[in-house]
Image 1 (cartoon, rainbow, N blue to C red):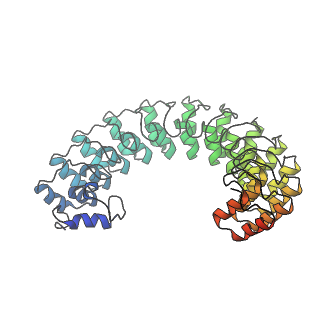
Image 2 (image 1 turned 90 degrees about the vertical axis):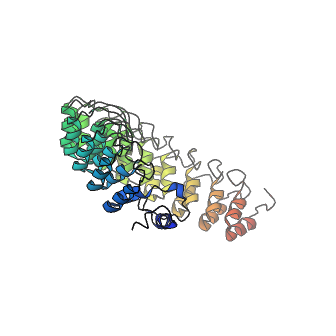
Image 3 (image 1 turned 120 degrees about the vertical axis):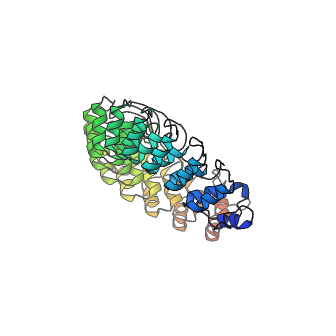
Length: 460
């Protein structure tokens, strides 16, 4: 073993190249300067005797490198108490910064190793040190639900309101994980329940996303604003709606959450619920006054979101509540184009029956026919042409439906479009014309069909 861990031959480097326990990967091209010291690997692997021998051989105890920054953090993350104690006694810097967890105390706190956390604190580890993936040790312990360590850190002076890390603060981390006891402890110790920041903007949005009713209630009882803005989902109601947590959505509305609040990836709570297919929440929101035509977000409006995902019941609900079937916006321009792109026949048919314009322009593919043609949805392409879709309409990524079908090699749609009068020489789009699109992709049968239909082989 010691021969393998001696940095005076190629055995150590080759071992790490073949299988790096630090990254759990193989990289035969990895250079020596990309590999941490042998002591780091011995500490990470829990090799107590090897670590002792390497230290006797004057290995640099504070050498930097590896995913966890240094040997002490690696041993702490792995829960190797004997090695951690050995390293500390030999002079390892307990406050050394760097690596995934920022420092050894955060690593021990994240993994829940009480004895190691206590040892590090006794040896002078800074309980408020910032850095690493979790921001600080308290947030790390709170995120993973390690009650004893969270309590120890606070007793040793950790700031319950320290900011930083993925979740902004310890309370948001605990709220996301549903760790009731830690959330209560943090609030008791003065954590600001309305603090902003982190992935979810605030603790209430995190609890709402996680579906943790008890914490959501606790936060609201402590005066948290049910309509607070920020974070990935814009507000707590949108987070609960996205995840389908009916009870929390209802609680938030009862406590004054604005059902029409804008923001977040999906623009508003109704669009989030519609996208995910949560019928009960969509119904609740509309009953409580959510605007079915509210604009914004990835899909522009709730109807387009439901159309894209193929949620028939929500689609009908929204239309019954007055959703505009021709509303513009979002990635696909309108609901019909979204349904056509995804191949949802029943929804496309319903939208047309309710007055959707088959020639409406906008979105990535310009119109519904081009979207259906690109994806190869024969039945929808046929339906659209029967309902008056212009086979020569210009716009979108491919300029027209024929070029989209030609690029993708959809023979049946190609024939349908030509039979319906599509101009085989129409110019525009990414490839200039349908023949070039087919030629780029190597669709010989389609190229032949286009030429037989009069496509100009000399057009560039």
